[in-house]
Amino acid sequence: MLVIDQLTVDAITAHARLDHPDEACGVVAGPIGSDRPLRFIPMVNAARSPTFYEFDSKDLLKLYREMDALDEEPVVIYHSHTATQAYPSRTDISYASEPNAHYVLVSTREDDETEFRSFRIVDGHVTEEPVNIVTGLVE
Image (cartoon, rainbow, N blue to C red; front, side, top):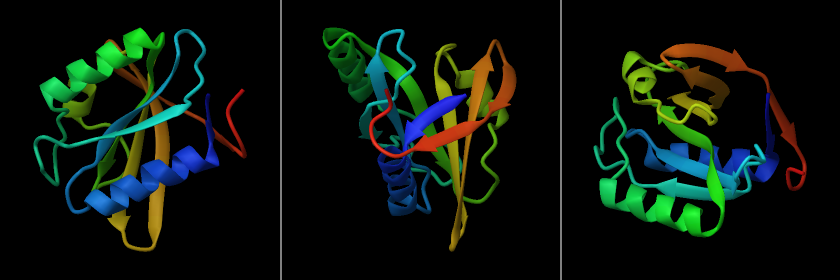
């Protein structure tokens, strides 16, 4: 189960809406081994595409060095789908390389509704998980 605070959910959703009609992407980092998403890090979709996202390789390298220095790991890796449901595509599944991460998808296909779902993706196998949205910091 993903336990995430409302402010982070709001930030992810706002980023997805802001970048629409292109897909938005980013990371929520947390202490290594904690499974606590604490630090919201919006990234630029280098592909600038409504159907595909790609982290810029230089930005990603910088992020991983920063997380390493802070003893963090990516707890949540998120991106948006702009015209389809919030479910991992074949491409999303093939690129999923963090077995401990929660892969959050946000669908912005409806103007007045945002779909927010979380998945575990390990060795090409997708499992949806419940999302528990809490008030305040995740402890």
